[in-house]
Image (tube, rainbow, N blue to C red; front, side, top):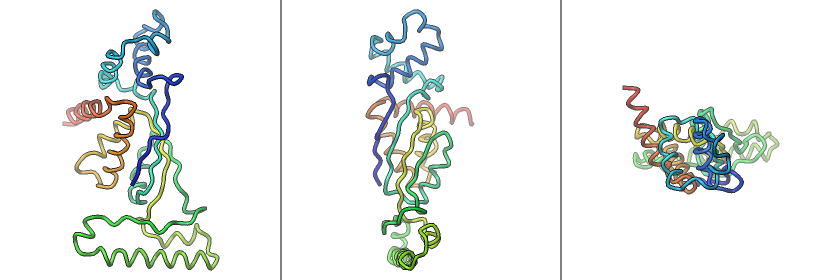
Length: 214
């Protein structure tokens, strides 16, 4: 499984975190006094850091920072869970128009229980049948019906910072499915390269959500 941050928005090549500050200052009416450029270029770096962390109290300003991730080598099991997060955009590798590669995920619990070999035999049998049908002229879109969800896929995902934090709150939980937990952790690690506060921000927002639910 590999997750790569392939793009993120920023104000004319500047620090994307300054969009969070700008949004907060627009809300406060400060931009009328100092102008947009002040908050994008002149506002002190330390204060940018503090405003990003402070956004846990009014997270709508986080929606102005947007990431695009390329995620590859995850199972269809994981991708089906990921796309349930609706405030995001997805483009997934198609099994209708593209042939499936013989790559699949074997859950650790399956191998630990002694079913690893039988699991592989079953999956590889399905793949051989898939290839046989394709070579006989069965369309990809029909031959794919025989494939287990263990086969891997790739997906391009675009999501804003607020939703990414929300996803992390749900999917980094010990109760979350292990593969998707690994995917989301890798996404947050990639996002941290441009918004290093994201881990602390996630901790604060998740804690607030837990407090409200109790």
